[in-house]
Structure formats: structure tokens, C-alpha cells
Length: 438
Image 1: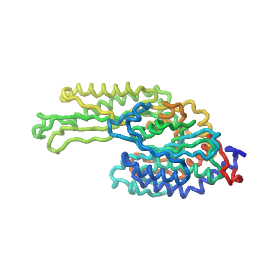
Image 2: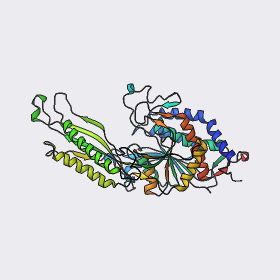
Image 3: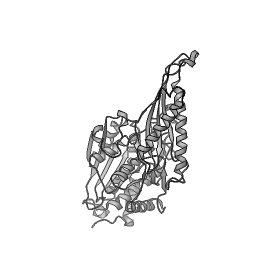
Image 4: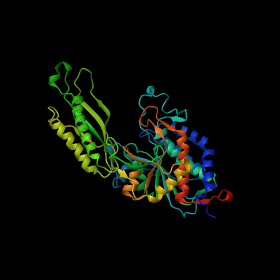
């Protein structure tokens, strides 16, 4: 007999199975967070996940895609040549009858730089648990959600059931800077009836997310001894002039955002950031060079090419108004994200499943809708391939900051929700030899 995913006894058994495995889950998350999977250094984390999947009997696809093989995929950006190839690991579980709906469980394992370790309360890659929170770079964004998805499937199996539909458990990189990892899995041919990405949402559902554009300003000055400053030109102060112009552009874009249906009630949804700067060679010399890496958000529905052109015009106009830059214009490199915003639409069926799972695990009627001022990989599925893509995960704090942390109670709730969602969305089959569990 096919198990009923809505049977209260089975749903209780699934929740109990999550609890039974949660100590092992926290240990697994601790070991995963110890791996400093910074950009370009993700191989150890990918090996870790591939080994975990093989140990569980998943079929594992581990491959590296040359960047050129992705160039014609929708959503591609070339990162100014800084990325040459993208490695991904996908586990596939087809242990059921295949009669149910299919699902992609995706998470990224790349993390952002940790900054000075002395400014952390505890070392960023030596995770600690304090007052119910796990601290560590990547613990919240998004290794906890990624681990929750894996252990949700483990819990189903301990409850004596397995998804009837096909599961793809995808470990990707480059989420923090381009999305090329998700793009590589789609180029490889992975598809499903729904995608589920457990980013740290505090058990809310991301209804809308912004897009983003990354670029680097390369400003060149004229060096001179500071005693004769009038004979030279400072690349650093010239860069400050350009940043001021971009901040004015940011204000104009946010004024217009007040009319956007998903963002009219979100204060300042579009953020410009000068996130990394380097320049100059000597304290008593006018700096001959300054490079600054920038990020600008954009709204769902914005035309990326048009926004990129507006950024270019803003910089060119500001340069024309500057006494040195008008004859020595800066260069612009497009270094990462060239990403559309995304609004979740046409997802009634998976949203209903998520609402039921959320209600069972938390007692709340449905997850809170959120309009994010950041972005995720969901856009690739919903915008370009018509696959409804849910973003729902645990509660995290100080992501991208010092003392990043994730609330472990929310991780357990999230694991319950994902397990119940899989049961509902994919359907269930009894595992051989455990008829009583169903």
C-alpha cells in the first residue's frame, strides 16, 4: 500500500526521525563549516558532499564545466575572465517507483571572505555552539540549510519511506558572485518539477528578490611628490568623485522603486556598495592608480542591459565633470553578477505543499512572504526554465559579517519542513522490508 503523506501518524514519525538524527546532523554541519570553502577553494567541500552522498547510496555526478561551455546559457556572465571553470556535484536518488513529482534540492557551499580573524569572537572556521547558535563562516549562509535538505531525506528513510519522485541533491559554487554553479547544473541537463533552495530565510518564503550588477572601476591618476601635489592627480580622490555620483544614482533608483509592487513597502531596496578598494603605492606620493569593486542592485523586471548602460552613463558623466578624469576616463570591467531580479509566480502547488509542511512543523498557517534585497539561485529555475523555485530555510544572523551564526532550533524546524515537503510533493513509497513504518 502506498503511504499517505498526510497521515498524521506518518507525519509524526517523520518529525521524530528528524529529532533522532539531529545530533548527528549538528556534528555533520560542524565538520562542513570547518572547511574554508572560499571562492576558488571549494574542492574540499565538494569532496565532502560527494562522499556523504555516496555513503548514503545516492548516484553521484561530479564534473567540471569549462566556462566557455556555459556561455550560451540564459543568465550567463563571464566574470571578466576571473572564472575559468565550474565544478559541481549532483546526487540523484531514484529509490522509489518514480510515480511522484521530481524535486531539485540545491544549495551553494561557497562562502564569502571572513575578514580579520581578530574581529571574530571565535575563529570563523572553528565552529562553536553558544546559547543554541552555531557560529562560523558559512554556518548560516548556507551550509545549515544545505545540510538540512540532506538530513531531511535521511529522516524519511529512518521513518521507513522514500520519495516516490526523483530527487537531485545539488552542490554548487559561485552563488556568491555569479550563479555559474547553478547554471552548470542546468547546462548539464538537470531538471525537475520544482526546485527548493534552503537559504537562511528565518522560516519565511522569499516572494521576490533583487538582481545585481558587479563592476570594477579602474582609475588612473598622475603620480607626483605630495610636496608638489598640484603637478599630479590623485587616483583615489578621483575615485571618490565617481563613487559619489553612483550614490546619487542609487538614490534615484530607490525613489523609483516606491512604485514597484513587491518593493513599495521595503525601505531602500536597491543598494550600491563599494565593497573592495585598492590603490596607491607610497604615502608621500599622489596615487597613480585606484581599483574599486562595486555592486548595484536592481528590481525584478528591470532590464539588466539598460541598467548596465545607465551605470556606464553615470560614470562617464561624472568623469566629464572632473578636471583630470575628463581627459583620463576610467575603465569599467564587469566582474561578476549580471543578474535579473526574480518574483515567484505560478507556484500554487509547491506553495501549498510548503504551507502544509510549515504548519505541521511550526503551528503557523503559512510562511511569511519576504521581498529580499539580496539574490539567490532561484532565478535560474523560475525565469529561464519555468521551474517553480522556492527559497525557504533556517534563521541566521550576521551573514557576510563577523560572528555569523545560525539558530539550531530553526535548523531542526527547517529539516522537518523539508522532509514533510518532500513527502507531500514527491509522494512516498515504503522502503523494502519496513511495511510497518508506512
